Image (cartoon, rainbow, N blue to C red):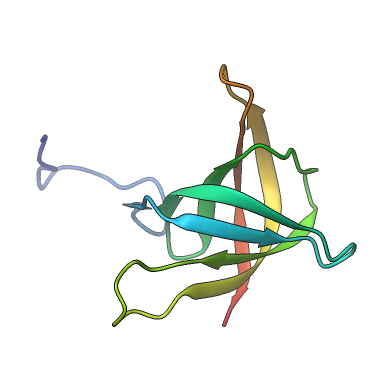
Length: 101
């Protein structure tokens, strides 16, 4: 694993934390629920993959589960900023967490 030297200049406000967790995705406009797989989190954003595509600027609710019983699941209102179709047919969705509960 590469180390980050003291001369490294982080280009983001928050460093990304890579996650491999189930994500429950709820569209509050329709009440429909979808499943996804978490990829990473930062202080104000998240990225996940899903079989479902979402629209840029669409508002969602994310519930990211923790496999550790001592840690609470993360529940956040989320705004989609980027959607990319992957080679396997899934979608990679990135966006901003508007409110973490």
